[in-house]
Image 1 (cartoon, rainbow, N blue to C red):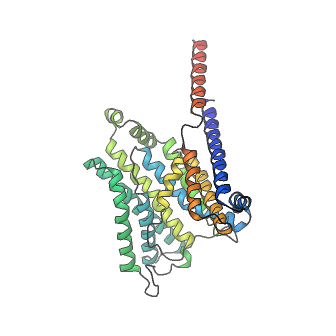
Image 2: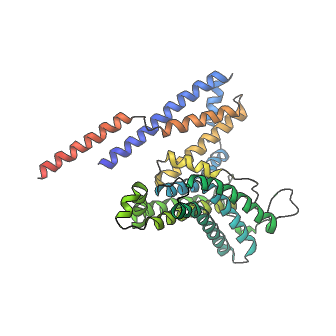
Length: 358
């Protein structure tokens, strides 16, 4: 009963935050636009006016679901490891290398490429965790720097070994058609990567909530000293959690690559990792809410893009609107007093039941 009440309260907080942010958004639009009604219509309804646009929402949500899951895992151990951006990028590089180097049967070749991406992503996120455990290095600094190390290291690998000289940028050779993830809805680019994302969400939820490893990671993140005194190998647990988190980011890099592109064509960090931080915050660092948070952010951006293209709303206003929505949704002060009241009532109810049983 307690779980149900708290879950409903969290949902209510989200809806109140969305409603408040929409009011602010509408006020901004009315102040800056000469056609506010059209702008609001495009922003709210625009993403649902065609199959292609609805497909854009789902397509945009897939990669940030993976990075959101990565952030949830990385943060669970209590580390502010931000290397999921580099893990996503180097995962796509590793998947490219595997796809172009190995001549395996079609399905097996795809599986091996994704495994290589997971391994590369896991090793990337492991580095800040290792440095934290062994050298007490600040993981925030090392992970931020590591992202750019991965960027230039990955670009070096592509340009040195897999660069297509017929292209004018750092593009790789074309992948074989067997490497492309099949699309499942005609008229969109939605592919089976969505099922991989859903399976990954379930797996992470299972790890964190139904395994001893997940409970150990949570304990280390909540109180590292107590976990250490209780006999847990906290250093090993931290490094393992960072590796697992990086695997989700690396897998996301391969799914995005084979689902949306025919060759490697990144020239900079794709920024899906930073979006993953937003997703994890909106999802309250709970794996089961990550896909919903990803869809919501993708919906906001799709609607904002349609509005900026069809009306006089400048793109800078779109960024402000997105920031307002995210800040209000993540604000813990919303319904804070009501939340305290619910907790007090639950405690009183529990004490009353305890007295009656005694």
